[in-house]
Length: 217
Ligand code: DX5
Ligand code: ZN
Image (cartoon, rainbow, N blue to C red; front, side):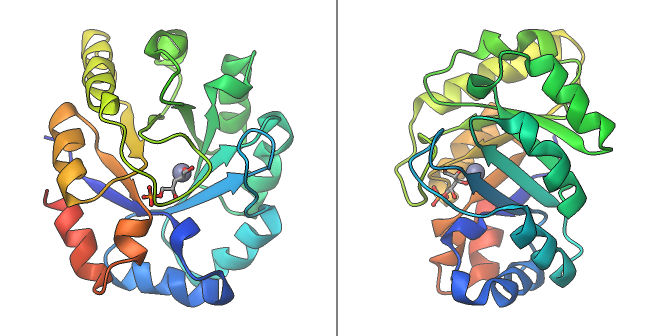
């Protein structure tokens, strides 16, 4: 069984004190910092650019898990890599040349992830499975924190796990959206090993306990 990693999403944090909010999850036992980059085009919301990532890079040693929800990811790989990203994830829906994007991320010396919206079929990533470090299965439609988990994600994770096993590949399976202790149990059983959680972590009275509850689900 894989170790479970928790990646709190700073989308649900208090932006007026972002540095403190990151230090909080670091002290509370987070494994990664999930950074949701939104462009107002691919998703109907705007968040952080590379300068913000460079600024918060100074406050923690935790790996930065940058989730690019942008229509032109090719323009942002290098800036976010230079800003301090450790994992860069692009959406398959935004990339006619997904293989090239994955190579671009690796050329920057970073781990490459590919994400799929709830409505995007799994076979879209089949040909790049051997090249990626991580597949991110969205369990909500991207754009906002605090949405309800879409149950179909569980079966999608199981099918991805089977595809990876059949190919003898070790690729992280991350899941993002509506994760709490209850949904965590289902996605972990299905094969996910990196769990993103925004509102369930930052909205909890005790952040360390929330992380522990999700990890142990
Ligand atoms: C949604 C983002 C998520 C979001 C998750 O577009 O990709 O990372 O922050 O938030 P919760 O855990 O509240 O669903
Ligand atoms: Zn995300």
